Length: 220
Image (cartoon, rainbow, N blue to C red; front, side, top):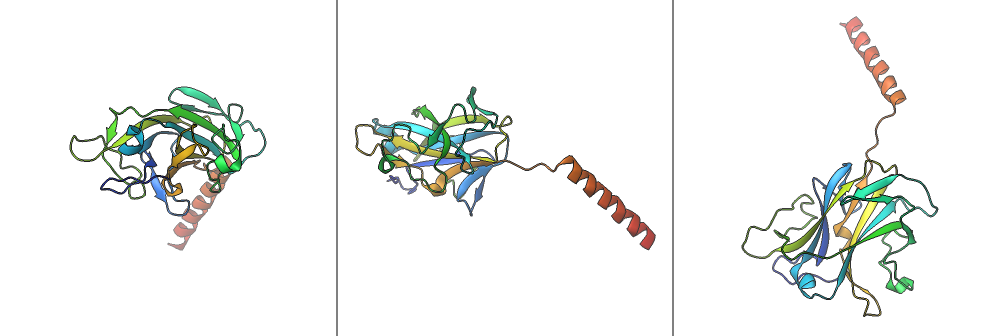
């Protein structure tokens, strides 16, 4: 993992999520929204080096080892079927051994999908630490240090699984170990499905509430 050499001492790579919160237990920027924007954030040094490929991994959580129909998600207008369009294991997909994999950090092996992208150096954001404010994204104001960003628009309303985990990393396939930098696991992102009460549970709650109201009236 490379660290920023800038005054803000931020990681070289990190993930922020619109309207996200920081979960101290999982050490992730987390959302339960079915539509959200994820920001891949990079220190200028790693992008300006100009020789790296960047990827965002979207992994099924908890770990899943058998093909399962969990619906689909849409990322920047592209539909990804879970798990048909995914790969099982640990990214990157080109890894030839565990020594060239992204560290598992409790997420892998599982089904994952990699999005290849590059940072547009005209896309600049004000520096911030996602641990302090996962929803702290703001466009660069024109003075001082800045980060590069790439925005990913997610719609997970068609996904029936429990969660998704997001990893961000830089690759150089001219090296024996191609992963040259990755977002610290304290600066990853996650989607956690919000549980909706079953109709039967809501009905029981309604009956209990009516009973409580009747009891209060009789006691008055």
